[in-house]
Length: 525
Image 1 (cartoon, one colour):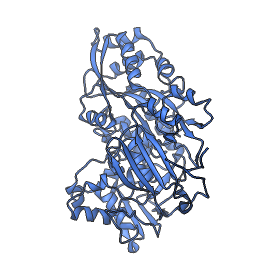
Image 2 (spheres, helix red, strand yellow; image 1 turned 135 degrees about the vertical axis):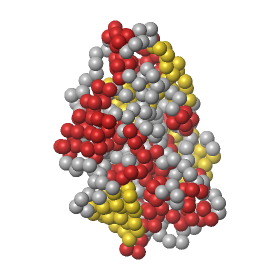
Image 3 (cartoon, helix red, strand yellow; image 1 turned 60 degrees about the vertical axis):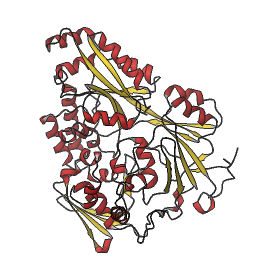
Image 4 (cartoon, helix red, strand yellow; image 1 turned 90 degrees about the vertical axis):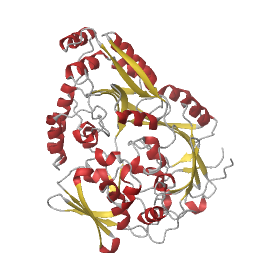
């Protein structure tokens, strides 16, 4: 594939630029509202769509909404929408109008109302809708002012609401396109032939092999479109991704292993970027399965794990031992929280007190797909397996080779324990404690742990706007977590990105998905 010299970077002057991205796994689809994995968000939310607001986990800024106001009681949010925004034009859809409030209403009403025609025709799950508590929070969405204003009415004040509106899963869809799909009796096209307002236009998906996008010549923020084409090459093997990056067969790659980073340090053709991660790798215990329903047992399993060995062996030392469910970069993190000292004898004594002097067996589910927060789940599981064997607990490791299959098996709830991870989606502490809420059981609460005291604390924290008060409540919640140990925090991984030096304008995203807005290419070496 030939590249020519760079120009000013705007779309009209860079129509010959193609960037190839080595992605780690195929997407589960292109409707971000159905997604729950970074690869799918990268291929959908951050490439094809926009949201009302945007966030980098630290601040929030306007996107499809240019301004907003909040009622005094904190229950009514009114958003004023950007004008002149166009949906993608493709061979299968030609929009007849610009983006307006009807699209916002459709996007959210589809998730909120199971009886709306499109939802009934294409029933599906929306993990973030439940994870964010939107299912009980949003009571009404109204289009106002001839489609230029939209109003959300909430059941109660909710401090994380704005941050959650910037999450990938609430990317805005086209109501007009949905109506066309419904009329044609093909509603699933919204997931596999996507239409958005974002910087790139979907062209083709070759299953398990490649995704092809074109730069959007009508994007409302033209300076962000510096590529004519963007190609995702699905490359599950991390070693192969590394080789392709070295050979310039891709200019960006997802999820390189820590062990591979050193191999690039002397390569003059690449640049290594790094930042502390807003992420967490953890080991969830299914609290509905005896004996894991006992906090005493969970604490014993936690106490037996050699976390430092995991940091050294799995992360090559490029991570920090995790103690809390909230990472250190997130405000609300409790720096006073400490792990119980690793002690196999005390762990065995706890098991004996709980009624298991001879130990027990558990299934340990993992996915072999490398993730930024866990570059080698297979090795991590084997090391935990060896640690648990020392206290009489036998772990049977069950491996899923792809993320979609892993998530499906996890939602079936057949596991006893599982290696999981999370990358922040909004920059609010609620984003980290919500996966342990009672309302998230069956979606993001992989521990299936429901604790009234914990639930009451995080509910109060979400209804208070004062940061100091909220921080006190999140500190209290983390102490309850540590006492009950529904999962074992393992690592806060450092994020790395290796890019070809011809790539320009790339910025690391602390929230996980790779962002191609503003990314361009210099000419040939």
